[in-house]
Amino acid sequence: MATTRSPRERMVFSAAQLIRRQGVTATGVRDVVAHADAPRGSVQHYFPDGKTQLVGEAVDWAGRYAGRRIDRFLATMRPPTPGKLFAAMVQQWINEYRRDGFAAGCPLAAATIDCADTDEKVRAQISRALNRWRDPITAALKEMDVPPAKAGSVATLMLCTLEGALILARAEQSVQPLQTVARELAPHLDRYATR
Amino acid sequence: MATTRSPRERMVFSAAQLIRRQGVTATGVRDVVAHADAPRGSVQHYFPDGKTQLVGEAVDWAGRYAGRRIDRFLATMRPPTPGKLFAAMVQQWINEYRRDGFAAGCPLAAATIDCADTDEKVRAQISRALNRWRDPITAALKEMDVPPAKAGSVATLMLCTLEGALILARAEQSVQPLQTVARELAPHLDRYATR
Image (tube, rainbow over all chains, first blue to last red; front, side):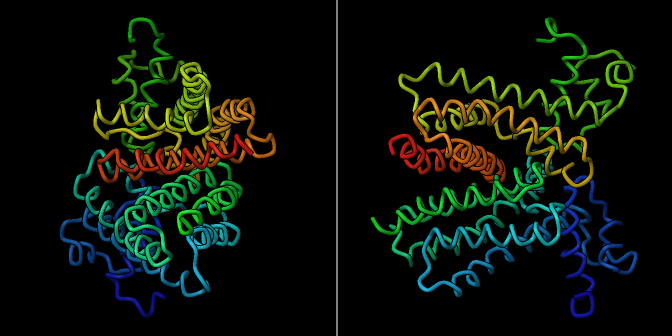
């Protein structure tokens, strides 16, 4: 990865990875430079607005990444249903936690907790990133015959439940909250497509 | 409030309030002392293990507070249902955000984001605090004829969805995610009590 991405891309990626482990406040610009194996001084070059810009771009990256995953999940389902899509979104995290442990959560949640009240610029970028994630879900739900007026609300319910399950999973060091919400919510979600 | 609580209680309360606004990392022990209007040097006296102990007690306090609220919500419902209980839990936050703005989230979520990977002692205390919140919900759901084997899972679904909605609400500076999850999830929750 380090060989194919530019130093700038690596720094954005590293910022996202550090933020999702320890939050924004504990993530120093120097830590990002070291994690990205980037040249010293490159922060000022690539991110003239400093940490706020770096955090904002990491948040952007996370929203785009999450949005792109939606299409990949859908491609594996014949036919996709709202419950199957939610279960796949949850399963990605179960797989990560089983493979890597519970070190990391969602960078959008971490940025919200640490910055929503203190950095309006980052806050607005989190909101846009959430839309980059939610919009493809909303579009997919409409394709699955969820009523158009309901699709955005169902997508919001999915994001909220997943975000909260990530917090409980990390606090409890267990994939159980993730398994529980997938099992209990998926049948409810499928009902939206059959009304 | 400052007149009826001891300095020690005020420091725990202040720690919780600061953590839910800006996270754990940004909350210094000095900030807590100032917010609590506590005597300098009282941290070493009351919290010999320093910030970890203070954060742990703030997390404990938050879990007990949230647990006690459950009984209060139930007392207003004749009869209580799972959906009504969830709507009341959500409404408390909608009321806070309408009254005070979106400055603060859940201290348990904030402590998880900032500490789950870095402070095992605090992490374990968050897990216990979540149980102090979830256990009265589970007990109440059983009273509402949710099958005993399902009650814990339904309580987990409620906590996860609320925690995630708080993150989206703060990121979007809007009560809409909270309103959405209450509206979309409550009917599903009520179905568990009628099977």
